Length: 74
Image 1 (spheres, rainbow, N blue to C red):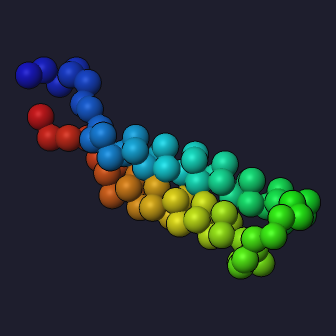
Image 2: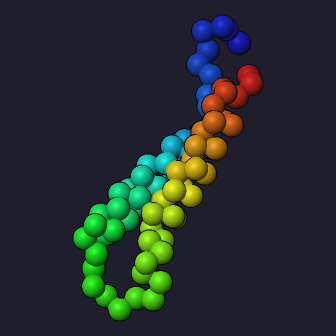
Image 3: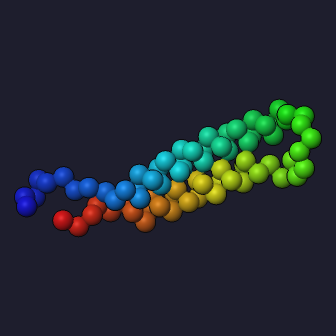
């Protein structure tokens, strides 16, 4: 194998990026609904679960991206 060969990153690196993007969208929707609430009769609406769930997705994506940032050994 030559030194000019392209080294590939593990799939989990890209899965981490996808989780961060989806988590960001979920947090953005949760913040929107925090300031412009929908008046539905939902229990535990005050917990703002979309903000929490989006934050969990972002943290999980950050962890996957951080720990899988090195290229795979050839």
